[in-house]
Length: 397
Ligand code: PMT
Image 1 (cartoon, rainbow, N blue to C red):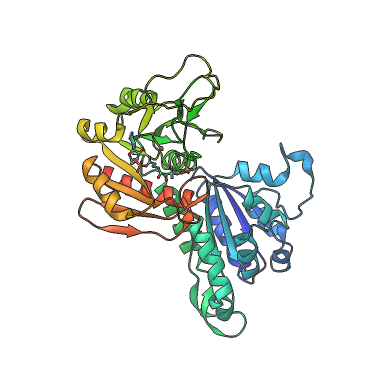
Image 2 (image 1 turned 90 degrees about the vertical axis):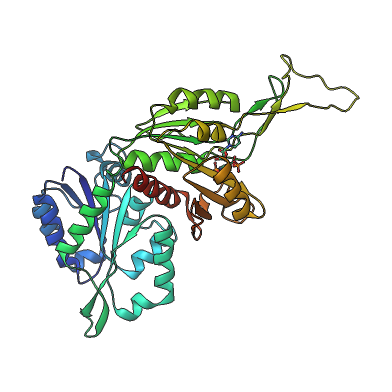
């Protein structure tokens, strides 16, 4: 396994099992680095991990900065392809669920935007406590994978759910997560994002509230899953993701042209862009001067890009979004059929924590056979993963 794996060890008795996890990962060819919380060092010596991994173990937030290109937590987060947290205490889960960064591990995790596997291990009552369960749900909704604890005798003298799974099981789960990443290798995916900009004059335009976040997250996940990705984006202030072809456009007609240029060579198109349905008939070449009269702008219809693709498609998997404010499923279903899509992602853009601008979304996926999968509020990154997994299943059938 040619990966850089960063293991976070928190203060639980099961920390000793993670020595074997690190050893197995190292033997499989991974580069392994360890961050320990101070409490973890009460259970296993940093020296043990250092000997096993051949790398210095990080504990202090303000250690020796000389060895790092950036500050330590950023360097470690940049270096790692994957993070494992084992054992993860209730305290760690609570802090991470709330974005608290008061030691090197919790700070590093905040700076880490790749796959994370968390292995909770604690007393059964602590695990089942609604606070811990709520924190786990929060982490899951952010796309963090959780390996459920096993049942059996616990160090506290009781018996029940809370044991850290065996090292072989943890390593198998890591293997599975990392191999999922390749489910799109050899595939080319076109993703659209952001809002189109329809010029009124050189200064003003008609736009919408799309930030581009949903589409950017989809493109990032597709890259992580091994696809060659073309991201065509309308207006967005976000930094373009890495390792893909990024094409910036303004008007819907420009977006259409860019999409049609690539359409024949892609396996799937995922249209999360908010495309304006109308544009100004004749944008003014000069800034329109204010006068005492009211101003009337004449709008003409923009091409429905996705509908056109639905007519042109051969084997491509076509995914649309439906941004609705009422009768969500009914209107989305109509678009699914009219645009000849494989499935559509419907979001109620008036719901709190959903739609434009925010980092979360609440969506339902509607399939051609009428099946509806409704998801709870989750990060756009987590929703992107759900969408890409389904696209990969369709492509690999
Ligand atoms: O960018 P964010 O801030 O993260 O917000 C995300 C989002 C709300 C923009 C996203 O989740 C979303 O809903 N995108 C679709 C927006 C939209 O234009 O929806 P629609 O219901 O008007 O269009 C239906 C589908 O047809 C969409 O896939 C759209 O891209 C496409 N379309 C629409 C009009 C048009 N002229 N051509 C199109 O191809």
